[in-house]
Length: 263
Image 1 (cartoon, rainbow, N blue to C red):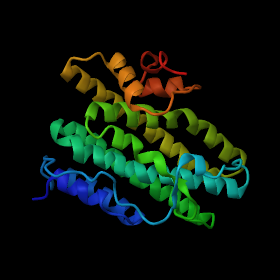
Image 2: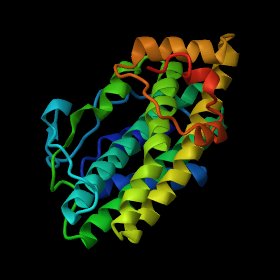
Image 3: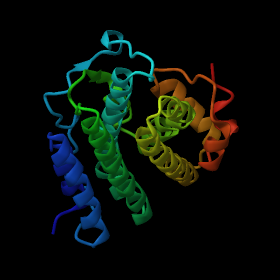
Image 4: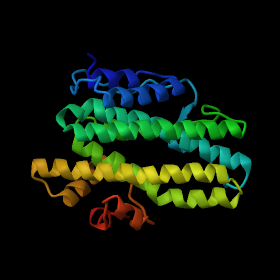
């Protein structure tokens, strides 16, 4: 019988975007059907397999996106979001395969569900790009999205602190304004997709915060102070307002975590 770790590794080593999306959904189905042993007994790759396109560029080399009002600007924004969701599949699967064996089954349930959500988000965005005459891989993409995984590969607590509680929480801050821009341009189809993603992101941040707090309790740490220490030591960026305090609060990520260290 295949183990959880073996199945996760197989998803991570799938390069084609659509094959990876299908593999992530299949991973989730296999777990829910009881077809995977709850054991993470193989090493996860340092970096997942990715396609030749999109070309990955350092942040400073990324072309500036134009406003979201033009079709070209909307395609560029949707492509950037599709890339985020594509990498997010690997982030969720790696979290399960790298650390899931040390957690209760509920942890695996949550993060395999997140991986399946990210796969669905990617499919929705790629389909929308096709409807606008484009596709994932048509434009360059940000090369730095996996850096957080590399910086936290040694510690589940650090991974939970940075990926769901910083990076995905940032999506809660910026997505409502992006939805408004698409709506203002008359692109209701894209706005509906982003609204669905936004709703799911609240649940993902909630899962990250809940399991971070659980692991802090297991280790005897204070959650807010521990999170602040990890963000200062493991996150290369800065936390910048404005914050969507109400959505963060709905996810359990209250101001006691981030207000003290926000720039």
